Image (cartoon, rainbow, N blue to C red; front, top):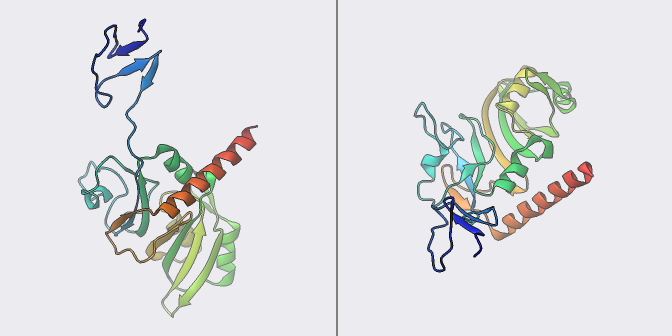
Length: 226
């Protein structure tokens, strides 16, 4: 072996030596071997009243409480407000999570929003042009009123960021506080009719769409750097 293999810092010079890749620190020619877990990507219809985190120091419910039957470690992609509901993706694929959550890649998120009052066209135009928030300017890719009454209305808005409470802050900036928020699409993945609090594995077609999106985004980043 000529000292090429080390386990937990010790050179292995005997054939047949056994090591556990999931527990031991194994190197070959100085490079660490890692245990490759099967890639998992899930879609959860998050209810209101759950944090989009793995754990909470204050003991509040997290989305992981809804996924106790899932084997393997998975992590939320980005965030969805505590009092919001709808599509939340979870995965153990670090590259995919990075592509979907980093703001520089501008992955669209679509929300149905119930707001106080009925925004006028000039107010919707402000959101399209961009409104200044405390953490920077934010704009809607598209927005339209679905239905309105005397006291409140429903709108559909698409943004390309996942900043904390972004949609709520945007509507508050034009004087229409959000009463209810539901995310119905993340990138190419749609919520569909999945019941609240339930989850499912992404279909092979959805996985292909995400991989195609990842490839496209990374290719664009490479061209920019070049």
